[in-house]
Structures are given as structure tokens and as C-alpha cells.
Image 1 (cartoon, rainbow, N blue to C red):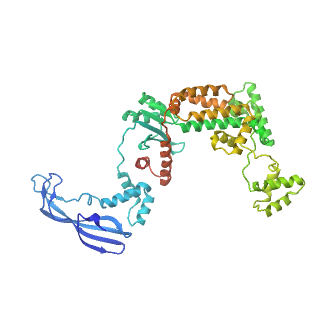
Image 2 (cartoon, rainbow, N blue to C red):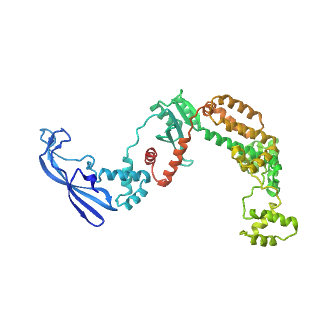
Image 3 (cartoon, rainbow, N blue to C red):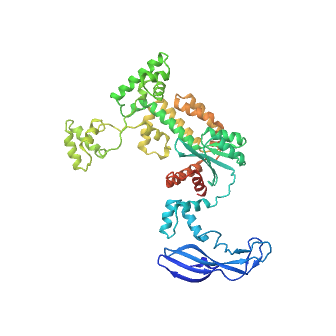
Length: 500
């Protein structure tokens, strides 16, 4: 039970209810002077030290140790010194090293208040300030410069303050955390710690410039996840822009007050643009946002701004076949009768929900409406992972629009490029040439972004390195920040990230 106290001579163990008091003394014999290193056994006096040890049976253990003050025999050295027992009694400490190690494990995972609550349940008295001091005293791993460096940013306070995390992209070991996400901060770190041969990063221009200035010979690799994410956003915009075309093969477009307002606004904007009015002046005259005017100006016809109606699943969907059959047999059947019939079949919704469902034409529709976002998701999904009905729906909708046919082929080609292998650099150039020839303006904007970082994109599609490790570190960092409720400073956050 008290094996950790074996270097001491235990004289008494007293049960005091919520606490166990152990009285002990240091063993007889000589001790070494900490200054001159000469052994001595001459005792000058005695002194008692009280240190806490790990709890026993959910009760605190207090060890009262009688230590000796010895006389140094060397002339000119210190006159007396108090003996220490390394590994058991450390200078100025009120806890044994093994208790301190247990506390360190808890505060490493839970930090201040949460660690204090857990330790109090384990019969260890500790304040949150002491818990944080113990956490900050934990030694960090030795800083080293990896061969493949991963760089990414994370938000300390979204849209206000950010920080940069550096990891070993091969082992995912944390290297360092820098305040801010500027090029100067990363450049200074890279110059102070040279040696990285490959740097994996996202599309940040600041990081690219910092690596280019500090490590001109290093290979920069763009993150493939960010490439696919940005490409998916461009595809979603293209699908939405051509919804007036492909939606003809599916449900009818909305035709109501909102659709009429969209058409009128399109004509107003294009009439002003035809008279030579600028975009900003057009926004002022029509009291619209500048981005809204830009979106209307890019569209050659107002029908492209209309969207296929998007409905969420409702409680009426399981009874759609019954409602279709009843309305086919008796078109004049009252909605109240239908409500009573499906109520007997187990319908748990309201009458108003059923009424809206019928008036929206969802009973007679041959297929459920498809939103642009859902169609974009079908386009971006691996074909082998699609169900048969989803594959048929995708083929029907894309076949109705020539631009959608081109877009589907470009999606498959770009997805194949994200499997790194030799020869992908030439295939990337060929894919960009094909995409530029298509009438897909949002995809052209994506390609312009690729041209600004072409070397890093080529490295991403040919080399096996990636930046997924830093994304995982950022996810765990968010957990740490939520755990501390944003009250901790950057120093403590950096300490916890590097200890993780």
C-alpha cells in the first residue's frame, strides 16, 4: 500500500477518518553535500516536512517526514544543509512526485476547473489555479524540424484572431503553434528552423509567400481536400445556374409572386446595364446589395435564376400512393375524407399539413422535386456508391442540359486526378484546357484559382503528401477550446495543443 514510501522508515500510520497520516523519518547514514559533494553524517538538527501522497481508499494520505539538517565538514562551504530524497522528497514541493504525476495526467486532459472537480472526487485537494500551474510545468516535447511540414490555421475568435499550427505531416506529431496567420510570422519561424523539404498547406496565399521566401527550394503541396471542397462549391453554383434547363426533365419550376419578382428584377438590372450604368450605381438605384446585382448580371436569361421547388420529407410521404389512388378514382373527394382515411392508417400529422401537401401538387407528381444542392451532391458522389434510382435520376437530369453533360464529365475527370500518381501533371493541364472550352463560368473562376497556385496543385496530384493531419489537429483543438470555454490565453492553449 505504501510501497512508494520505501526509502523512508515508517514509524506510525494513523487513521483520522477522512485522512490517513503517516509518520516517517529518513534513514540513518551519511548524506552528500549538494555543493561540494562530500559525505557527512554529523546531525545539526531535525525538521518536519508534510507532503501529500496518492490517496488510499478515497482518503487523503498525508506523510509527515522528519528530515535531518546535516553539517558540511568542508571549510568554506555552506555550514548546514537539509537532506533530500530524490524521487520522494523534492525541494520546495508539498506533494510526492508520484502524486504530482497523477495530477499531471488529469490536468493534461481536463485543465483547470474540470481537473479540479475530478481530483476532488479522487480525494486530492487542489485549486484551479494550482491545476493550471502544474499543467504549465509539464515539459513539452523537444522541438524538431520534420522532413514534411504541415501548416494550417485555426480560429481563436472567428473573423477576429487566428493562429497557425505546424505538424509533422508524416507522423502527425505537433511541432509548434504560432500566434496569427501572417506570412511574416511563418517566415520567421521557417528561417529560425530550416530543414523542411516539403510543405503541405491549404490555398492560403500568405503561407505560400512565406514558404517561397524562407524555403525557396522546398516543394509546396496544396491540400487535396480543399481542392475538392472548392471544386464542389463551383459545381453547386453551376448546377444552380442551369436549373432552368435540367429542371424541365423533373418537376416544374416555381411560378408565383417570387418568380415574377425575380424576372422583373432581372429586367431592371439588365436595362440599366444596357444603358451603361455601372454595377455599383445600379445597386444604389435599385436599393440592392452589390453582390445581388453581380449575380443577376452574370445570368444571360431570367429563367436561370429560378429554382426547382425544394420540399422536405413530411409525415404524409408514406401515404402518398394511397392518396394518389383515391384522387384518381374520385377527383372530387374532400380533403377531410382523405385525412380521416390516412388517420385510420396511422397518420400522425395535422390536417393543414395534408392540405398543403395536396395543394402543392406533390400527390400527382411522378417524382419528388430535386434541389440544385442535392443534384450537385449526386454529381460529386462516387458512381459506385449511388443507388440505382439515384443513378437513373442523375442520368435523366444531366441528359436534359448540354452544360450538365459537360459538367458531369469534368467532375469525373477531376475526381480521378485526386488519386496521386505519375503523369497526373499532364492530365491536369489537359483537364484545365477542356474545362476552359466549356460554357461553365463558375468553373472558370475555380480554374483561375488553380492557375495562381499551379505548382502546388501539380505537386498535390502527383505526390502522396497531404494536409489531413493538420485538419485532425484543428478538430481536437476545437475540443480543447470548448473545454476551456474561451477563457484561457494563447500560452495555455499552445501548451495543451503541443502536449496532446
